[in-house]
Length: 420
Length: 219
Image (cartoon, rainbow over all chains, first blue to last red; front, side, top):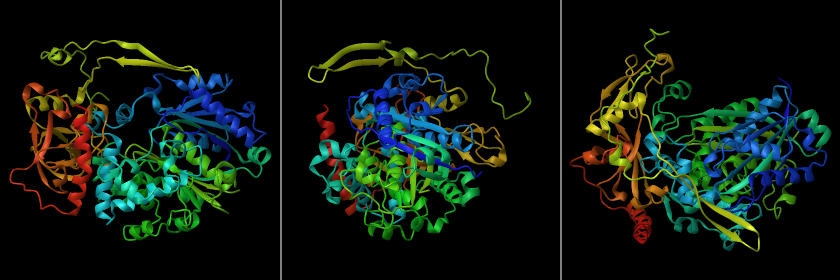
């Protein structure tokens, strides 16, 4: 199929906890901001809406997308909602990609939000744990940081990494967020640190689940994001100079229970015995490979060809594990890769200049869309306007990677964005 | 179709001859939605309503009932594929092997012992688990299964847990069992001794100390 799919606009509300805006207002704000960048975009252009919202528990409202949809004035327009855990945003983007790629629609809106500040953090952790296998895992006291920590500890041991190595990702993303006033890290109680958060601060923060501390974990948030997915023809005509092409898209899945990955037959068939065990995100490797293939990127050269990436860093450990899953390094080179800070702003492949989930926050339904929008800003040179400085602007970036991630790596999507 | 052994039978009529609901239900009131207060900020004209939402809920274990009944009886039941022999705990009611094409698995009683595959020390958790912190959540491979199950590992200092350590299943007192995974936990196998303290264990201990203090402060 030669039809190319583009991102021709997008915006994000501030992410915060608490924040006092209803979902319909948050989405409306994002659309207004998109129109400020792309004046030719009008609500009348929309042909299909994909809503991205994870948990009706947080809002105590089934089908909350119905509220947002008619609030926007879009009666008559077809809409669906996609729910896929932490990968809800990435999956909604994937849905919009399919809708345009198929030729059925030319202009599709993707709007996502989450209102996690309706509960306390410990209640929120339990709500989210309802997305694990409740029969075995949530009941035993498990919440997602605990599952991730168990996987990360084994990964750390087997790859000769330390708590300090994980802390580098947390440090980088939080300090990058200090330039982006929409991030929760910038807006919140953390103003004290600005760009000066140190590895030591992270090591000294409270234990969440060994080896993860508080600053190794993302922030529970309220927030929304919007992204405009269009045909290239529409983008060229209405958003010239401000659009990117979705050159590759991959979506893959793994077990809900991390403990079921030790010898899963379908993985053994694909990647050999013992893979992914409990240390790897096979769904990330697979969806990354699919996206690389579609975009014509050789796996081994990915680290050279990708110029900027927005990675789902729910935990500092998961970002580090993803480096390997995306073929940027291997078991032997990962220590060096991390310690040489190759994903910092001054490195060869800056990751999460927008702040990532640890800096921006993680209102689940909005997060994957936020990552795509941040990457879109990089490739359309809008960062200096969107962030408070140009320190987090990756100049001349041609190729971006957007990653979205759910469960314990249960569903993962990867997208390759390119300048046209 | 009806002759296909992979199909799970759906019982038309289920009569529960052993009923114990009252033991656990007690005086729990089902209140459903209950609006029980509000906050108002005059300056910003912001209103927040306190919504309490509570109700009893059924969890039908259906095909997995044998596992739940096993918990009540202090037995561990997993499943095994008659075709390829893969053994599972938590049980899978159909084989995961694509070549076995949804072969229905058979119940097998498992030896109540296993090996720690990986673990973590939880210093934070969901609301209902906060007072148990810090605890070790371990992924244990039970009796040669192809999968690992997560459950609490007790009976040791959290920082003494090890990869590959042998563990045994320990049951809650019979009258406290609920036919759920929390009816048992893991403890170190008899004869296992923790290794000497080392810098990594010291580090974990240091991280645990404020957690112990914090839990005490919750009274």
